[in-house]
Amino acid sequence: MDEEQRLNAIVNRLVGATDPEEVKRTYRDWANTYDNDLQSFGYVAPAVGVRLLSLIVVDKSALILDAGCGTGLVGALLNKLGYGQLHGFDFSSTMLDKASLTGHYSDLQIKDFSGPIATESNTYDAVISIGVYTKRFDQYFIAEMIRITRPSGHFIFSCREMYFKEVMDSVSLLLKSKTVTRVAVEHDDYMTGQDASAYYVCIKK
Image 1 (cartoon, rainbow, N blue to C red):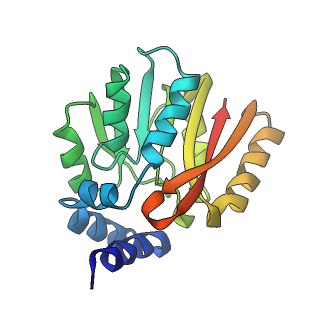
Image 2 (cartoon, rainbow, N blue to C red; image 1 turned 45 degrees about the vertical axis):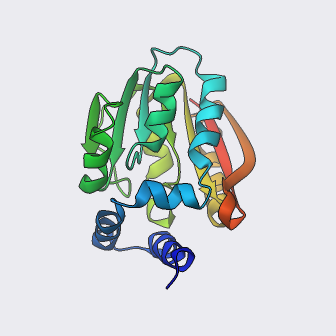
Image 3 (tube, rainbow, N blue to C red; image 1 turned 60 degrees about the vertical axis):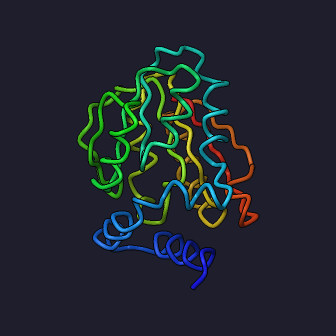
């Protein structure tokens, strides 16, 4: 199996996974080569997401949650732009161990986005989540991220094309209920080495 086949197998396993323990095992086994693997395949999604956030959240002292922070790729980009108050949530303790070594996060916690999360409402000025959304999260993820975002704050996340319809169905319900006030969507590169694109959704509470 060559490197491209190996990475494709990992990504496909995660995209299709419904068993939380399988996801944990996959990320645990992948943690040591995760950053280099994604860089070699042109994983630009963190840069796209952070660029969008920087256009919206101009206050560098804003409290920002990196939801599904992994090894800290998004946190490194945010830190480079001067955002100094970063928290990170992730499902994998192994990935969080890697993220802690970057020094970019003041708080890191294990969280499972497939259900309600034990975090107070209206906590964060902004939430960003890149490369995280899968079908395991369709029931709770978006609503929970909005819940923990402060009023007038923003939630920015990437969505692979296969999930876009279900995501927008959930967002439409939030708009109708006036839980959120505005939604913007961009279509941009996701992983250039695989010619993969994604939707980047920005929701204002």
